[in-house]
Image (cartoon, rainbow, N blue to C red):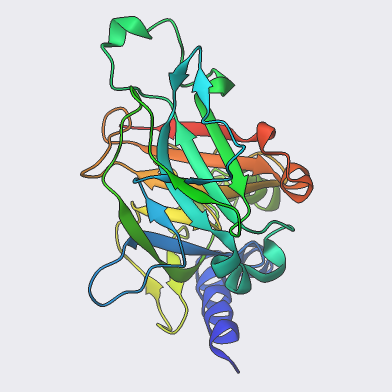
Length: 269
């Protein structure tokens, strides 16, 4: 049995211990592969050209995204070609580089307060780029330029949070005590790491790519959506009251390369 199968077997065993049969195996089947993303250190290697902050990697003819002339901030770049082998069939056809942008300019708030960065879809953008043609481009003023941090990617396997609709669809009844079954899945949103043999029982707030997000205030994924990137508040940025920012996209749109359908969710305390 290879490492991946061993990890999946541990997930199923854990779900069966928590939920019993047949619910445990049905929830275990929802597991998805993804990555924990973190700044590369001395003992880790960046995942290709993946980075947090720094310059964008855009093709020469691509315009820097903006809202009413105010440029968005470059948050991260994912090198999908490097990440794709671990994700396998769980990642719809997409390749190259993905640039993630969000709106919070280095300006007095009164100058852009009329723009709602939480609901206005102009305030976020995911822009793909061909690695052969992409060139580094610094953020134009008054976008905020975050410190460049090459990003490492650690393979993980994750389960959906108990309030995600896919979990409620599976656990759509009450147990013998009259409690909703989905509540029993409350502690299942851990991450299992390839090669560790055990779930990582830690506070799962951090940056993630693909797989399932770790929601701070409950599930938010819609049917057939793909989680692209989760950014946690850290030394470079803060989302609300030390919250998290999530980029998600319908699977069909991702297959078609239509990143205009990306939506953002922000959750905080």
